[in-house]
Length: 412
Image 1 (tube, rainbow, N blue to C red):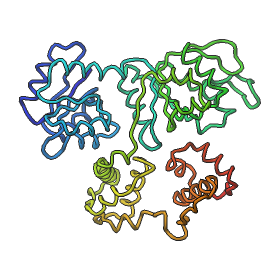
Image 2 (tube, rainbow, N blue to C red):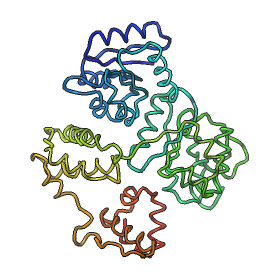
Image 3 (cartoon, one colour):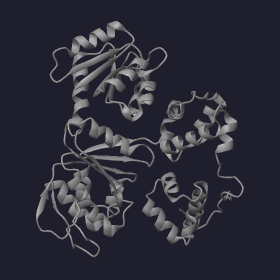
Image 4 (cartoon, rainbow, N blue to C red):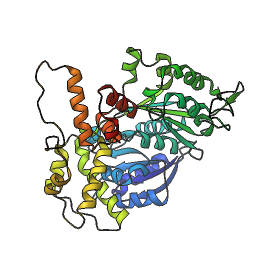
């Protein structure tokens, strides 16, 4: 395990180096005295783990993580202040150690940092749409000993049921009408690496027993073949729904759920960590400046206040898209509250959505249809964006549009 130590105090760095000396499979790749050097060192010489101080001049440990984004390694925060513990775990720190660090606690934390990545156990990530489930899955893959092999992703909600089985397991030539040549499935393509089953809750019930067998035996047959193919893969499944609740409703097999749920992980929605909004906004602004080779725009406090007043139902993805729109259309200007109101379309805007209050006793179906139409209007008719905002799959969105008789051609 390659470790970068980041702390502005020389004695703290020396203590950690001393405690890690002689530890098996541990290599200290460097020491950074501030957050800016830490970001630079990670980019130049990737590491598996950072022992990261929280309070440092100019750039805090949390801001280091925001700047690195998906490039960030696993992190154990090391600090003298325990009031940051909740925020540390909200951004999925492996552990949180208080100074002076006890040697036993340090080594326990290192063992935890290896556990999720080094094991071949399957992972289930439950979180709302837009929170970064796929990024977390990629991070797990890249931190594991499978990182040099393929990372393959398949969206279970994006494919029609009759194509999903072929997409997962492949088929032989002539297996069905239109199968003009043999094709390897996602399981086969991910051999030696990691397979991401995105939105596993949308997996049809009739395919779940076959998936269960693959997870248990690590072998399957292509459609149209009887010969078994063995694969060495790690499966990471994601869902924006509660699979436990789906099991109780009879919509998901309990044995498959328990087989997937070996290492359960979750990502809180952005509304549950609103203190992260300013950090994320600055991150997106800096990222936009790099992409456009322009100066980093000034984000006025009034703009930040408006960002934190919004609930961001589409989570980090919605915030990122909104920031890109605001920055693209207001280049060279200080980004203030006026920019927010100019680019943000509130629910009560005339001609966009209905602002009528529901009458008590109105059937749920009527309210649901109204809410669906409002959300589609807010998303400018884009079904994918509307589904993300509502926390449902694209397949469910299509079904709702059909169920309520909404004109499908209006929505892309």
